Every structure is written in structure tokens, then in C-alpha cells.
Image 1 (cartoon, each protein chain N blue to C red):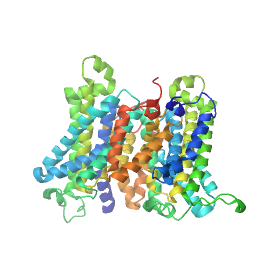
Image 2 (cartoon, one colour):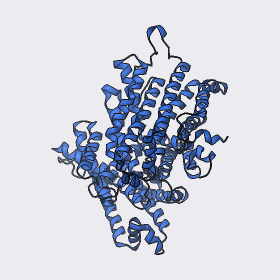
Image 3 (cartoon, chains in turn brown, red):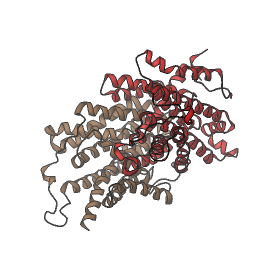
Image 4 (cartoon, rainbow over the protein chains, first blue to last red):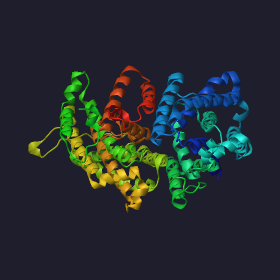
Length: 290
Length: 322
């Protein structure tokens, strides 16, 4: 029973990483209609930026500033290389982010070296939450990840539903032409949503680095489950993407208890089941794919 | 005659003198490579990847759908040939041809899940589903050798005992690959000039209209997907026998990305564009990786520049503006 809880908890933690990744992907997709294949590369870069800042700013400062610097870089890249492609063949933006993924991964390898490094987490979070009880595995850092992840998502939804800017973003996702005709600069909203999506990936990267360690290829293993999460949650739904991530994480965590290989296949089984009974995904909008 | 005309669509003719000239040129490629100080296997690589990308381009350039999952078929072909040679047969031809039905069958299964999708969604779903094949190759240690890859097989000779053709030498294997390549190109050309191939263009240009004209759009796309996948799988079988090795990275989604990039770089609107792209890609990789450890960085930058400034590929750039 404890083992089961342990796997569920572990799954939920990894699910937060998937969820934040998928949420970022969904945010970018909903406005720009770009599938960001460089999302994993951004995640890694964000984590390494925080790693460099860590000795100077401490955990909290590097978490926020690392992700913020990454978002700034993403905004610049969006402006420079992705914006020219919005009105062109979707194949081109896919290939561009593919090229970007290669560049980011190799750049990280050049700057920080190919070998993984540990990412120290604050002392206060390193201990178990209930030492000496059957729930000893519930480390504070794991709980912290889940709380921060959920808190972030809540903040994002408050931002999107309660602020003027959030309203503009939602409008642009729905009908960017009308919004543009009403005199709003839609392009800057695109840049904002791209940067925001990458910001979430950066945060996920820093949080994941504390849990899984830091290596140039860590983004690769997180990217594919995030795509699954995006589809399971339903394309077009931001909340669905995050919940899809948690679900994917928990299912693969549970399956991993029985066989190591099962965790990857269970994810695909989940995907197949969802698509079989609900082709648009759990929370997806109807007709989004066609 | 314009250079680009070499790579463009033919006007409904199955085979032209230009095709024959290209085949002859490819026959001489090993000498050319040696003359510039390179090696024969590079030529084999170019033909193999060119075939894989041309197969993929049946889907991208003709049917207008971008599959980001064709590495699954490349890898399936590679593992099929490897496993056949290891356990079932000592016939290179049989091991190579076995990839065709395997690729087509896998494509029929995978294709059924994606034929209703368009644009980036088609691409995203093919990435996700094809990655399942990667995990199988990676995890099924007993059959595939897992992370270490599949070893313990080698390409065999051809022909009956009296007329035995040994393929061990890299030149001999190059000519075997050349023959398979030429036959495949003829088959591809036959497909794209046939009424079936013409209807793929209708899928690309106006699927709604095609549907109103009575075409079963999904089924037609499935046919295109299966045909496209079997050529890529065939290339995979050739690739495995070139290096006598098959590994999971052949099925990774980044390999799919490389295949799409080849079709894109060379020019997806041109019949031979993907071959050109594959040649450019492999040569760039060869040159860059001999100069610097971080060649992926430069390759990535080149991709980005190519997408931004040469969206129609080399063939498109050399050709007439539409």
C-alpha cells in the first residue's frame, strides 16, 4: 500500500513537470498554431540558467530569474525567427523549432558540458514531511513541487480570466483577425504567449532539476509525455493540458511499479483509450483537429 | 537547359532521358567520391537516405501531409532486415524486400489513427505514435538488443550458387543499393504519374473538393501513407545492411525530423528534391563533424536559415518562381 502511494506521489510529481510543459505547449499552440519542438530544449536551458545563478541568488531567486531570463530569450527568438513564419506553411514553423531544438541542446552541451550535474535544493525542503511514519517518502520537495506547480497554474488562470491582458490573449486565441481589426497589436500578444509558454517550461526545468538532476538530454525524456498529455487533455484546453500531464505522470508511475518498461507503454495505452472513447481528448474542443 | 528542370515534375511521362542520365551519374558516384578524397559508403548513405526521404515526400510533397514519424518505418525496415538475416534467412534480397510489407502494415495501423487530421495535428500525432515504436525497440531487449542495438547479422551475397555475387565490398553493396534505388525511383515515378498519384495531389490541393467529387479522402490518404512508409522501410533495410547494425535511434523522432528536413532542404515540390536534400544533409554532416565536435549546433543554425530564407528548398530556389 505504501509502495502504491509512493508511486502515485512520484507520478504526480513527474506529472507536474509534464503538465507545466504541456500547458506551455498548449498556450503557444492556442495563439500561434506552432507546435514547439524546442520546448524540451528551452526547459533544459532554463534549468542550466538557474544552475548558474544559484550560487549568487539562492534557490528562489534563481528559480524565478532563470525562468524569466529564458522567457526573455524566447521572446527575442520568437520575434526574430518564428514570427516571419506565421502566415506560411505550418511545416516551416515545425522545422524551425526542430532546428532550434538542436541548437539549444548543443549550446547547453557546449557551455555547461555533456555530463550531468546535481542541482542542490534548499536544506529546508530536503527532509521528509512526516519523518518516522509510513509516509516518510513524502519529502518536502515533492510536496513543494506539487504546490508550486498547481499554484502557478492557478495564477495563470487568474491572469487569463481576470486581467485585461488575459482577456486580450483569450480573444486572440479565439479570433485574432477580429481582434486585430479592432486595433489590438496581435503580434505582441503572440510574442507574449510564446514567452509565457517557455517561462512555464523553464520553471518546470528548474523544479525537475532538483528532483531528477540536470543533464543536457533531460528535456528529451520530458517532451514526448508532454505531447501525450497535450493530446490526452484535449487540444484547445489549457486546463486539460495540465491535468493531462498529471494523469500521464500518475499512470506511468503506477505502471512503473509493476515493470520498468510498462511505464512508457501505459502512457500510450492511456492515449489509445482516451482517443478511442473521446477522440477530442478529455477537455478538448470539438472539431479542433479538423 | 535549367539545372532545376532536372529535379522537377515530369509532364506525366514515366521515364525520361533525364532520369537515365541521373542514374548513370549515380553509377559513377563512387569514383567521384574517391576523386575528392571521400569514401564509397558516403554515396551509399546518400542513396539510402535519399530513398527514405523520397518515400516520405510522397506524403509531404504530393499528398500534402507532414509525417514527423517516418523514422518508425525506417527503423522497422532496419530491424526487419536485421532480424531476418539473424534468424530466418541468408538471403539479402529477401531480407530487404521483407521491409516492404512490414512498413506498409505498420503504416496502415498508424495511418488509421491520423488520416482525419490536418497540418500540425497530423505531424504531432505521427510524432507521438511513432515514438511508441522507438520504445519497443529500446525496451524489448530479448528481440531487439535494446539500447545496445541489434548486432550479429551481416549482409549476404546475391544469386544462385553458380552465379554468386558477393556484396561484402562497399563498392559491390553500393551497386546493389543503386539497383534497389533505381527500381524504387521507377516505382515512385509510376505511382506519381498514375491516376492514383494524381489523386494524391487532389488531397493536397483541395480535399473538400476531392470529397465532393466522390473520393474517399481518408482511404486515399491511407494508401499514400502506406506506400510512402514502405519505401522508407525499404531504405531502412538497406541502411541496416550497410552498417550491419540496427539501433533504436533510427526510430527516434529526431530522425523523423532529419528525414523531413531532407525533403524540405532539397525541395519538396520536386521529384528528386529529397535526394538532393539527403545528399546535402549527409555531406554537411560529414564536413561539419570532421571539423567540430559541436556540429549539431551548426546544422541546427543551417536548418533555421534554410527555413527562413529557402522555404522551397534548393530545387525550388534554382527553379522558376511560380
